[in-house]
Length: 422
Image (cartoon, rainbow, N blue to C red; front, top):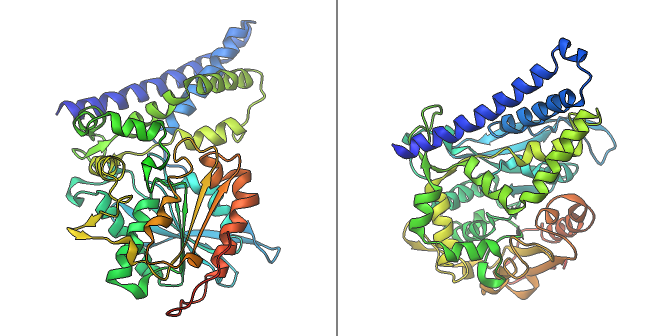
């Protein structure tokens, strides 16, 4: 019960700060305040505006904001986000482009379940839907999922991916970004043995911790330092009475956000101080760089506690994927069973979350896959975010990934190798 009280206390603090911001903004904007020629009044209004917006975004799911798209035919087309598979913990979305012929490239973009919504991949989706049929995993906020829906751990996550791949069919090309990379590799191996005809044509793993010890970072060091008991006691709480998932054990989004912010506290403090001054000077706007970034960054979601704990224990501590010892429902998943799916890894040279060496470790596990079906790329100067969004993705990585997909779009023939793009 005390964990529910703690959860509700965090929400109370967030709500109070949002109210304080709204109050300061309203008070300082009252017409009579204009009679006081004091710059502190304008600063208070700016502080209130930035504070209210920031704390409000923490509990709001961002919109995809992809309404139209200029495609290769040079025309603007309407885009509709349609749910094609609906499940309690996550849906499969399709970005339908009206008035355009179905594109030959069918891509399943596996979004991370790591504190932020799938909309974190908005720019990635935009760059792909111009000439691809794009499907995305849209994971739900655990606070909104009733306890009656049951648990959700790394095995359930893997089986969700298996179902999504089966639904899309074997002509699919899968791109897994960051956290889901090891579990997407496991899901592909699961299909290789259980349902070979449902395997995708290719698998691209971007900045994922296949082997966290391949090149340790602060993230992996943290996983080794703390015990599972400490994590369960300090990080996991029960959803409070305000939400549909009341009583469900979660790793709260607000707690995750405090961890994210503390890693670069000086930079975030400076960013908000500068934004307050910009608002006070009338230089800010609804869609300026600060708001575009923090509207997404501050929007966090609760993770099921069992998913968070099993990820730390099985992927990071016991390294079950790295050792090829992962099991689903008691059945071993042998990554060496993958023999026809072309696999490419992408890493950023300056990635301080999944450092170079962690993701490329997947290729050594693919003992049944011919060398000509394996490829890897390390992007010079790119950090973690840059390898799936931003300039590095748009200019260098995206063309390589699409070239890899095109080279491996034909149905594999037994005994025939595939040409890959490095």
